[in-house]
Image 1 (tube, rainbow, N blue to C red):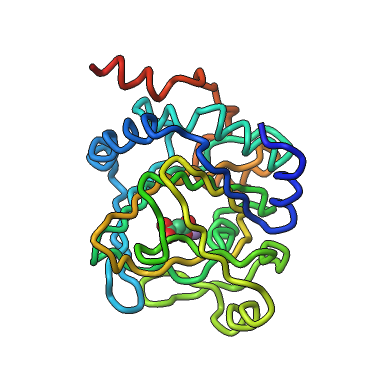
Image 2: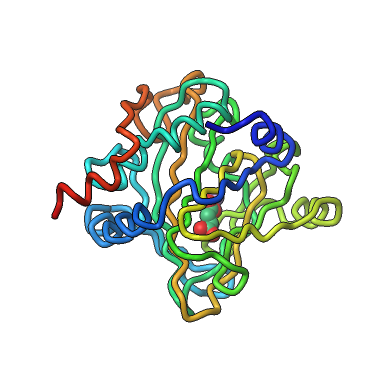
Length: 252
Ligand code: SIN
Ligand code: MN
C-alpha cells in the first residue's frame, strides 16, 4: 500500500520510485523467465536510436500464464496502479526492456501518451511500472525523468531516428525549466510513472546488462474509443502475494 506522502509525491512529480518492492529472490525468478518471455513474444522490437545503436524490447498485450503474468497480476503492482489512478485498472501491455552491454541504445525523450493518444485513449490516465531486474545506473542507461513534466500536457511526437520522440524544441524548453533526474534503481525497485511524464535513457556504455520489466495499466474508465488500443479492458484477477516465488517452486 502506498501512503499519502507517496501519492502526493507522484501527483507532484509524475513519478515515484519505491525501493525494494520485490525481493531479490523474486527478481531472480523473473530473470530466469526472461528467455521464455522472449521466445513467447512475436513483437520483439529492435529500435535503433539516433546513433544507430539498438535498443531491444519484447512487448505483449495479453496477461500471460508465465512468471511475468504473475507480476502483471501482482497485488503490489496492481494495487499501487489502482491507488495512483484512483480507480480500477486493466492491463494495457507489458514489455521487457533489454539494454545489452555496450550495444544497448538510447531512448529519446518522449511521453508514453505521445503514442497512446493515437491508440484512442481520451485521457492520459495510464501508469507505467518499471521493475528493475538489474542495477540501473547512469553508466548502463538508467531511465531519466523530468519531474513535473506530466503537467505540461501532451507534446507532439515525431520521428527521431527510428524512434518516435517528443518535439525537440519543446523538450529543450522543458529542460531549461525543469530538472532532469537519473532514476537509479536496484533490482526489485519499481518506478511508477505517469503517461505524460517526459522520460528518456542513455545508451548502455557498461559491461553489465540493464534489463527491466515494464507493466502498463490503463484506468478502466479510460477504455479507448473505436475499439482501438492495447490489452483487454477487463479487471485483473490478482494472484497471491507469494505468486512469483510459488511459480518457481511449481517449476522445480
Ligand atoms: C527504457 O527502457 O530506458 C525506456 C523505457 C520507456 O520508454 O518506457
Ligand atoms: Mn516510454
